[in-house]
Amino acid sequence: MKKAQIEIIGLVVIVTIIIVAVILFVRLTVLKPPVHTATSIESIEANNLLNAMLKTTVCEMSIQEAIQQCGQKVSICNQEPCSYTSNKVKEILQASLDEKTDYSFTALAGNDPVIKIENCKTGVSASPFSIPARGVVYTISFKLCEKNL
Image (tube, rainbow, N blue to C red):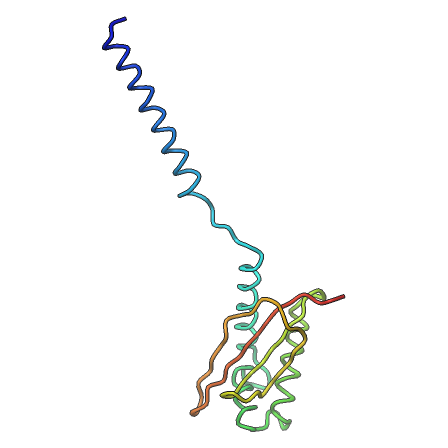
């Protein structure tokens, strides 16, 4: 074999190695499936549960509207608004969660708590939900956590 042929074969081997390296790099880094940690999935579940609960209808109004009625001290179904809404929130969450999961739910009118259900301190929080109404901003906080059995 001539010297030029040997150099071409060497060049082809080097180019082949580079192509294989680039393919492996793309395969392992760029096309890697997204990693979902347990915490991110639980956070999504907490947000979805909060959104669904706030849209649930009780006594011909949503829980979101019932929280506003509670802050304005307007009766709901001829009952005290805050205790009625608090009881409905508890019913919905107990029906929605399994026996291993606990929760905390707080609704504030400005800085004043109107509904406060604290069954746990640490856990995965949903994003705070704000409801502006008649000059008052209602902020709803929701947290899922494991029960201590």
